[in-house]
Image 1 (cartoon, rainbow, N blue to C red):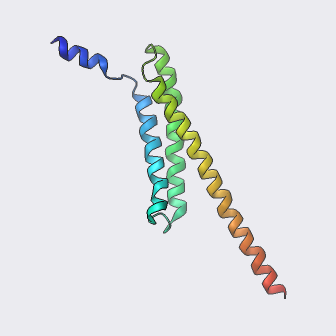
Image 2 (spheres, helix red, strand yellow):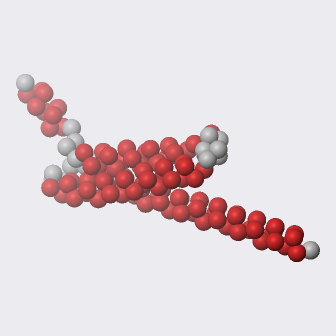
Image 3 (cartoon, rainbow, N blue to C red):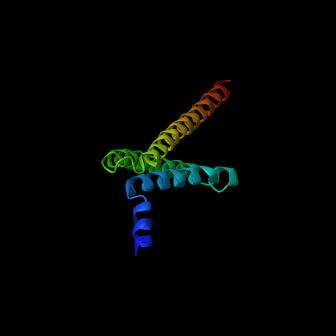
Amino acid sequence: MDDVAARRNARSRNRPAKVSVCSAGFGIAALANFATGIAWISPAVFVGMTALCALVAIISGHMGRFRGRRLAGDGRGTALLGLVLGWLLIIVCLLATIAALGLIAGLAVLTDAANSK
């Protein structure tokens, strides 16, 4: 009986921290689909999924850090990892969106220059 109680106490009770890291992992997996070529069919969907996962990771990471304070530090590092990965995913999504808009604007300028000649 003592073994079961010890194992139960050894597990982390900070569920938001676990959700944060798991959600950040799903966001990274959505971005990794660009390497396989699957995401190039509909890139906006995969970038949107990544942004949504990043937002969940950031929100639950903050909740996990707050809960970790009440649980004597349990899961605070995990929550911090989820927070950092979530913000990095947001930055990558913003850069991808800016690059796509720049490509569209550049093509519009080239098309306009070709039509004016």
